[in-house]
Length: 266
Ligand code: SF4
Image (cartoon, rainbow, N blue to C red; front, top):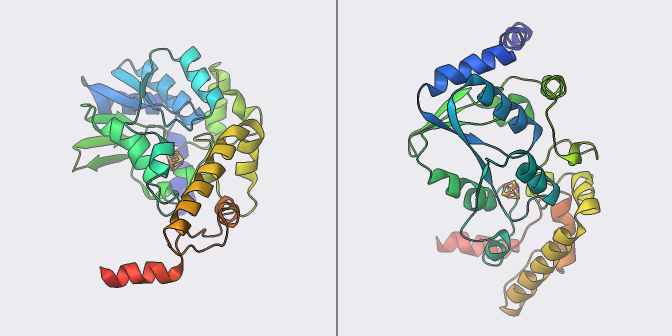
């Protein structure tokens, strides 16, 4: 049954169908189009352009972006507006706990907040079900009542090969990182890259080592500051924490006792 469903989606979600979906969704309004410089948003931006609807392209600049992606956007999408957060990742890192897969405060403070402030009610994103199990549970159209925004995902059921097929057959440019072997691109330092082998962080470190030096130095400063305040840390050294963070070993910042004390206080 599931195969039949997938087959149906595969058959219906062609570029022509996606263009029609965009036209019907946006109507006469001006759509916000989220643009990351990655392959999915390159395809989405092209489909939106072909649909003929009114739209504006926005990139959420985090300050920990891969420089080659930023250069690619500036060169190939000069109309794309850069949204900048009030505070940098480094400034926020000095007052928060380090971001983790369970607590990704940076996505909210660096990416989403600046975009939320814009007046567009209709928002088109290059999100795909295949990207993660969380995303596979989304709908193709989602209404967010608090913000009064509706998100539309024209390529929601597209597979990776369809994305590359579209890019190649339409002669679209893409960031050099894909030729270097990156499968997904985003912030250089990101808890999403933490996994058992550490491969993704190693890949980014190879090309952008200075970001890692800065991250490790910021973590070391924070760690020492907390220790000097008498706080109990989970690891003995910042190096141990960072290594666990890179390998997604549930790197913990505070010691268990302190978390329990905090919970009791609440
Ligand atoms: S580092 Fe990762 S979690 Fe943080 S803003 Fe960038 S993409 Fe989002």
